[in-house]
Structure formats: C-alpha cells, structure tokens
Image 1 (cartoon, rainbow over the protein chains, first blue to last red):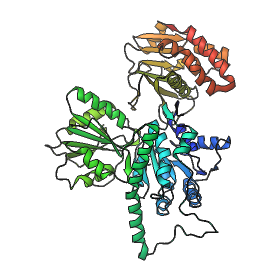
Image 2: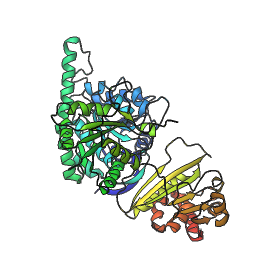
Image 3: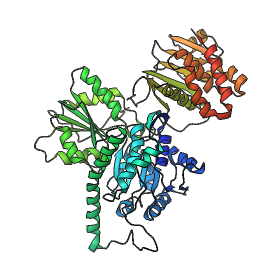
Image 4: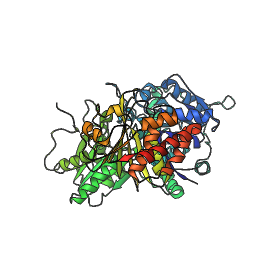
Length: 392
Length: 181
C-alpha cells in the first residue's frame, strides 16, 4: 500500500529509485543532487538493496560505468547536476545511440561561470538534443512518480532509450514535504525486471557502440531520431497505466485555467505551481490568465502544444536558461518553431526567469502576465527579455 | 497558511528544526514544506531556514518574505541580523533568550507579540550541549498551537535514536516554560 510520507525530496528520489531494484548505480555526488547518491549508497551499504554501488572518481566514469553495466543487461540508475552533467558530456550522446535505458535524476543547477550552485535549467538545455527522453517534475510527488515511470518507459523494447528526470535543484531537491510513496509490491507489479533486447555477452556476441562510417552515420542518426519521436506513444501508455494504478494523471503538457484564457503562460519545472497562484489572483481581477506546464520536453510535444494554446491571444514562454547569442531562449525557440505554421497563433513573449537561483515570486508572474497583455499590439523590442535584471 | 522563518548559526541545527517541524505537521495529516536558505553553509555564520504549514497542498515554492512567526535559535543574532524583517505586525517573534520581552523589543524594534524562552539553559541542562533546535521546536509548537507536541515525538525519535529521550524532555520543558507577552 502506498503511504503518505514526509521527506526531503532528494531522499525520496533515492528511496523510490531503490524500490525500482537497480542492479548497478554509479554516481559522483555534486550539489544539489548530492543526497540522492549519498542515500542510495546508504541503502545499499545497509543491505536493503542488492545492487552494485560504484563510488567512481568522476562523473565521466560514472556514466561510462553505467553504459557498460546497462549494455550487459543491468537496470542502471545515476544522478548528477550542472558541471557534473557536462563532465559526463562525452558519454551523454553515446547512451541513446547504444539504446541503453539508463535513468538519470538531474538536480537542475546553473552552469558555471560565475560559479553558481543554484537552480536553473542551463544544465539540461546543454544536452537537450543528445537523444535522451526528458521529463520535468514540478514537485516531490512527480519526482517520485517519474523515476518509476522512467524505467518502464526507457526499458520498453519499442523505446530502449535513456531517460532524464529533471528536478529543480534546491527548490525541489532540498525541500521536505509530503508525498505518497508506493511500496515495494506496487513498484514490482508496475515495473517488472528489465528484459534487455540485446546484451554484450561472450556467448552471444553482439557489438554496441561501433564506428559509424559516413555510409551509415546518417541512417543511425535517423534511426535514433525516429526512436525518440516514437517513444511518445509508450510514454503516453505508461502514464495511462500509472493513472489507472496510482490515480495520478500525467500529460505531456498540463493545463490550468486555459479554457477561454486570453493570455497563457508556459512553464517548465517547479515554478508551475507558484505561477498557478498568480493565475488565481489574476482571475479575481477579471484577467483571463491561463497556465501550461511542460512535463515532457523530449520528445517535444508539438501537437499537444498546438492544441493547448488554441484561442489564446498572447503566449508567454518562460525559460530558465539563456541561449547566449541565439535568436531566442531554448524552450521558446522550439515553441515558436512549432507554432510558425499554424494559420492562427498567439503573439509570443519570451521571459527568461530564475537564473542561478534568482527567486521568482507570485508578484513577478503577475507582472509578466500584465506586461504581456499588449504584446499582440505593441511588438516587444527584443525577441526575449531577461526578467528582473537589476540596473544599479 | 502559516510561514515560519528560523534564524540560527551554521551548526546549531536550524535545518533539522525545519525538517522536524514539517514532519510533525505531516504526521498529523497537514501539508508542510521545510527548506534551508539554499546555499553553502558555514559553521557559526548566520543562517536561515523556512517552514510552510497548511491544511492542503502547498503550491508556492518561492522564498518566505513575510513570515507569521520568526524563531531565533541564538540570542546573539538579534542585534546582528534584522530578525523581524518582513515579520507580519500581527505575527510572533520567538527568541531563545534569558532577556525580557521588553529588552528584545528594544533591540529588534519589533512592536508585535514577543515570546521568550531560555532554551540555552534548558539545552545545557537536558542535553549537555548548547544546541537548541529541538528545545525551540517545543517552544514554537506551544506558541503556534496548530501542531501538537505529540506529533513531533515520532520525527524526533526517528532523527535522534538513542538520544531522542533527552531531546523530547528539552522540547517538553520549552513547551511548558515559553513566555508569550
């Protein structure tokens, strides 16, 4: 039976990862994900989980060890943040190319420099096109749920891809709150042991991670892209089954008060619920605000996005990373690209918020909504704004 | 919703306090958040930590700016840090001190309700160390009156194991001895 618990979200992430019975965990702790591998190491050391825990000397080794273990058929979990993810960088795109269903919890943290340990999405945005499925949790409950879902999605033979479960650093990782934790029996039932499609084994020789000559590289990339696009069907199936089993609904894009909304805001991650309070307050003033939260970022939910913004006059896309020197911040760039071919589409405003742990309050969301209300008549000066920059 | 800000010094257990308080509230079916002031902590430096308590799911995840209650674990902070910053006029300032409420009001310039308890003396006596987090939790539970003292028992036992008993005694003493002016 699922149980309501109070726990720090990072610890809960570790507990639920353990319930998924990983065979191998290789990780190198880095703020703010530290408590996830730390607690898993404890769980393994105390004998609660039969698992090979590899306390490697770097993130590069962590993901390399994960790749090897996954290739021989193990269920594999790891976690990192920020520079740790970049240090894994060489291996990150190899994992999906080898079709290895590793699950990684990414405690989102700003990239240095300047050195910053706080939350934004510049880490995940740096690897967004490397072939991993990308989920974003808005709270502790979604973090728990998505870790279990991630194994089921990734290990499905129609998918066989790694999954990044994003949870905002500090804003989620370090918060103690109440969550419903499934028990071992429930997780076992939902998530049977991994049945690998192919494994590296001396008795049954296959090659993984081979050289891709110009004659085959294009086709390999096409196959990888198709695999990621096709994974959406399985993601939706798994989410349906989750809802049926646990009663909690998951959608690629969750909407809040968007029916008849005049100005809609899109968030990604844990700012969703804070923005929802702003939407409630605006409704009291007669301002028809609506809110969307993107839970699935890769594969990009283009059709759901088109449907979700239908009828809105203005769309505010919030981003948690700067695409330095680019045309637009990363989430908005894709939103615009998806909506470009729509005969009728909202005016789009791009607000970059919450960089490197800068707090974004309910009032800030209200200001963004009000300012954006005229965006269809008065074109903003620039394609994006970095919100709340102090000028003195 | 009740928002609480804790002031302490790194190493005094402010983060443990917010954890225990959140767990006590969750234990009795309420919803809660407990979180540190996000960042690198240094032993001895002023730190803050925060709680939110409500009867339903808490949506807000930005910082706490206008707390209903401020808890000060270390008396030396009240002249050093503006502990009453943003504290609601109808809120409560709860300080670990042997000073009178009047003296605390003079130092902090807070004109609202002030509660005091000599948690350091209690902690020395009951725990043998001047760490006042569980002691001040007892005082907070009394001053707030929304979460039962009993509900903190499980979380304290889980956190402190064989030394939980001493902490529970200190917590109960502060619960009984805190003065609300």
